[in-house]
Image 1 (cartoon, rainbow, N blue to C red):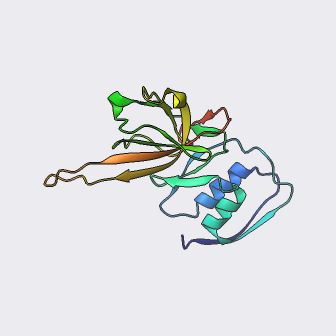
Image 2 (tube, rainbow, N blue to C red):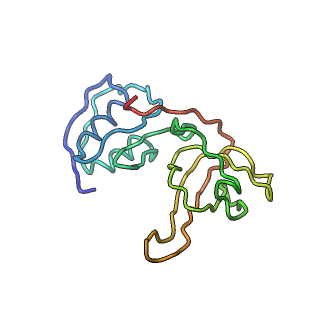
Length: 173
């Protein structure tokens, strides 16, 4: 992002205020979900440099952009969306695969799942992995065309750590 900023934020504001200020610098982005960041700035903070790099710095790399919204959430927070169940009837096409700290899951194309939302696995073949998981990454593959018939799928990278997750409502709510 080639957006830079030179400004000073006054003492007494919390980190959520810093996020609002930084996001306002982007012409086509709005602030989405913001987690619980109540710690107050003890002294004025000088913001100078690439706005996105500053956003990552002040959020401890806990920010991401989805659908022109910047979301900033702690590791134990998820989007306050409904939990989508992924099983054979909803498009689960491969057994869940365990990695180091994650589970990879492949389904038929599923565009409703968003990064930082919760999904629930219900696998008849690998019931060991049944449960709710936080979505860390999404990879949609395939071709959607009226003239070419092809397979479209979604591959989800899910967090398997010991955290209990809290829903974070959208800033618009």
